[in-house]
Structures are given as structure tokens and as C-alpha cells.
Length: 183
Ligand SMILES: O=P(O)(O)OC[C@H]1O[C@H](OP(=O)(O)OP(=O)(O)O)[C@H](O)[C@@H]1O
Ligand code: HPA
Image 1 (cartoon, rainbow, N blue to C red):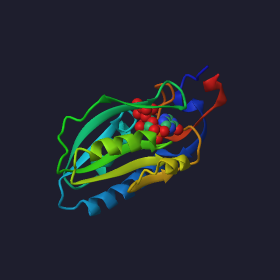
Image 2: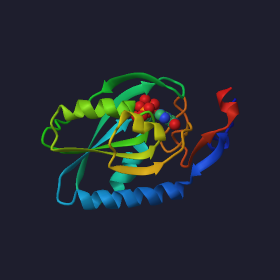
Image 3: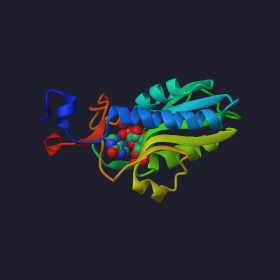
């Protein structure tokens, strides 16, 4: 059974909305500096990266464009299915473009290792990754990430775009769910 209010289902807050915003602004400052004078294309990975993309893009002062891909490797639970599928491709031809992939979380690294090799074959001028959260297991798939918001423990987390069974994306804090949610 879940509670009436989304925040009541959290058992532990890992990051408050203020901590998320502060870290995101620091990352945006790095991106502003690194891409100064370049025409940047931000590629958001639906659905989870919607919040990060909205806040990151509005914290940048450089010019940027945005496009979206939808990729799925998780069903309705907390375990990766191990099978990555493209549900929606980019509208933009990225060849010769400076591309920054924007993600909410890298967990096993499976989604991004697939996505990066797919995007690399389209011959962008540069291709980097920004993720708001990264778990330790991501190292196993050797995904090189240029910008990381927070390295987090290997626990299932929700909020700030991250869902459990489609819910909790609208939580402004990030945390772990109480056991009653899973029962
Ligand atoms: O590193 P991995 O183990 O591959 O996990 C990371 C991916 O899992 C989540 O997406 P999901 O497939 O759940 O879709 P969603 O963004 O719509 O929630 C998340 O947004 C990442 O894209
Ligand atoms: O910890 C997580 N939470 C929500 N979605 C996810 N997708 C991969 N890992 C996670």
C-alpha cells in the first residue's frame, strides 16, 4: 500500500531539493566553461532525464539545442531487464555536432554503453555524458562519464525524475522507498 502523499513513501532522503539544485548549478558552470563558443546539442534520455534536462538547460548560459531519445531497459521493477531497446530516436542528425547526453542515473551502465556506441556510429564532433546520479556498478560497463552530479550507494532510489513502477518522478527530493511500497 502507498501513502496519500508521495513524499510519505520515502524512508530515507539522500538529497534534498536544495542539494540537488546546488550540485546541478556547479555542473552547469563546468559545462558552460567547457563548451564556451560551441553549439551544443543536449540529448535527453526519456523519461527519467526530463527534470535534469529542464533544470540543467536553464542553468546554462551558453547556446544549446535539445533533442530526446527514449530507451528502455527496465520493466516495471527495480532490476534491469538486460535488454536495451530504442523506443524513440533523435529528430536531429548529430554528425559533426557537439553532443552531450543528459541522464538521470547510471546504474548498471548497460543503457548508456549501448546508447553511446549507437550515437558514436553517427560520427558526432564530440560525445560526452552528464548524469545526475551514478551507482558503483556502472564501472563494470566502463562508461566514461564527464559530468557526475552525485555518486550514490547501490540502492534503488526515486525522485527527481527517477521512478518506481512509473511513480515518484515528481518527488523533488531523492531517496529510498519504505518497504511497504514494494509489498
Ligand atoms: O545504467 P542502467 O542500469 O542501464 O540504468 C539506467 C537507466 O534506467 C533508467 O531508465 P528506464 O529504462 O527505467 O526508463 P525511464 O527513464 O523511462 O524510467 C534511467 O533513466 C536510465 O536510463
Ligand atoms: O535506482 C534507480 N531508481 C530508479 N530508476 C532506476 N533505473 C536504474 N536504476 C534506478
